[in-house]
Image (cartoon, rainbow, N blue to C red):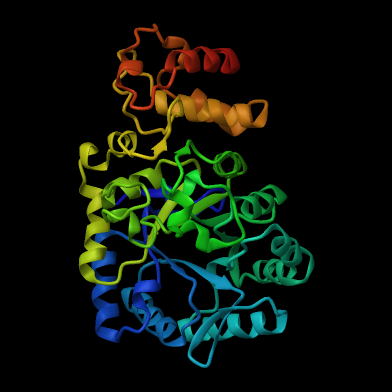
Length: 381
């Protein structure tokens, strides 16, 4: 298992984490088997969006039994009422539900307090100004949560929250189909076949800016919906072609700022399929060839950080250089952290001899040589 820094939090998380969806409505034996498999594979983090008290108690017992340090990302603004989950923005209810969750988990703190399901800019502003963010800050000051996070499906709302400097972790839906769609307050449009009827070209610019802003600000991203609710793995995929589990996971993990993919596995077979990503070959992880063959989607001219351009005869990590170049261009300057990361590369853009081997291998027709020239100009090497 590979462990990755979660933004500026100081936490190291496994790049494969657990979602809680598959644990709902299950029993103690199932929970134990799933945790046993996850822990043996090195998983050390979990998202708890659901306020289901039975699930919290089962998960809490497994974590206590394991004795392992486990990073919990637990959600504010959810409550369990009459056997059902619902989002809430009523501050008194938020406080009560969060306290209940801690008791059911058998703990007095969680690593990340995730403000739940903020899918509009207006809602973010109400949370920021209406007491909920103040409550999250107070929990952090008291040590009840280690860091403040937020979950969202809308890049416009997420971007405003990230650029406010108020959150340290973003849980966001990341996959190659959703990334082509513009932001919307209606999450159902991500799943609607009509959203994919017309040809789609390249990443939505707001989503791209969101990922780059998170990288620049040190906001770690944890991923939900990596398989699009399973749709991307079927022949009925909105892409018009089925992807594989390692392709979907690798796509998400190669986005800027992404640290961990939370897998909503419903059984041990699904969990194993995701954990097997750690042993997958480069060819099995490779998503570029599949993306290039999608009938109605195109990333022409856009670097996907897929690494297909490698190997460079001069040892340049072209994908990383391009990523740092895009971060600098998005900022209209070179942030210190980006400059440091670039400086740590073994070979720089200035080492490029313009042989063109990378250009020939790129499935998306990126003008790599022009990017290397621009990176040399911006970074000075």
